[in-house]
Length: 421
Image (cartoon, rainbow, N blue to C red; front, side, top):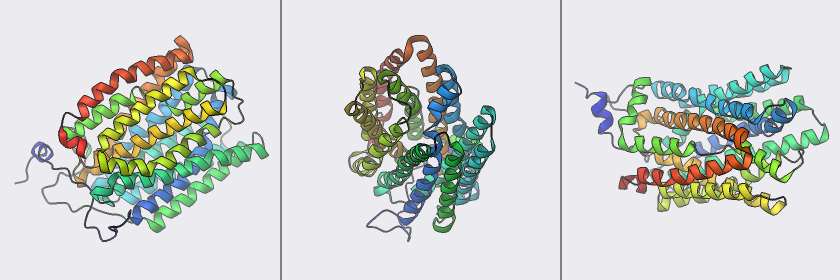
């Protein structure tokens, strides 16, 4: 008789990556990880070409108030979170991580054609939210595939390599949009066409060069479902990570709001606004792999916490920012460092706390919680901006982060194994 789900999950030993995979070279990062990074590279060129012009377009062209933008920004991030568990469960159940991720990438690429055909702000907003739906479907299967393609001692480095390639695309996307609009002002249709083509290339890389990697599953393994995904929260280490990640996400200001506050405080012209995204992406690109290697060596939880200390410094700079290139470079460098120390590192840390056959589902649960927390954070920041102005909103979130950090440290370090993972 098979053990119950409760017993199975309570006793689950953390199964990390596939150490004996013949496709994983012992002297470097697996080629599957590099191919997934190339897929994300082109996909992020596609997405960030559009994202880089959205904040100013919505607030200056469509006249969104800070509260309305906060609601949209939160929904834009939270929409992907709502479907991550579905994508993760389907991928675990079918053992078809590549195909499920591919469907998400295809959906996002197709939305760019929808943007090209839309003329009203309502249709445009709907297309953007569908794009986030595609992102939600693909994220957990993709990250599970990275984990299953990596050895345990290179897990954070593998996520760092993927995030570096992903961020290179995020860096080039705004530059391309900036150049296109520089040559043909307000030619948003040209941006959408170029965005679609980049997304299509990324989809081709995925299906031509990425291989499925499936874990060895015993007969006693729990069958993936919504119930088993929720049941993963019975694993103490995983539950701690979800709580800590969700708590810190509640006090994280989105990039778009940080850039808008900086633009308001410094009186920066609208035309170079997309280049703010480039500065953050460049810092992330440079630091993702080194900080991933550092996390593998000294512990992933300490690096994750250090990243949020950098975020607190970012808030301080934003709170007192004056005009000038040096201030902008410092702000963007700190923000990129925060992402490099937290994004892939959290995925690597969580991967070691999950059984291999439910890894996609577990990562989906984590990212759903953090995405919904960021939705609440965006809405809260919009409310604070409306009530107390941008400086007051930043001050409230800075205090919130200072209060949340010791709580997160206590949660993460209450079990010694979490620190070493």
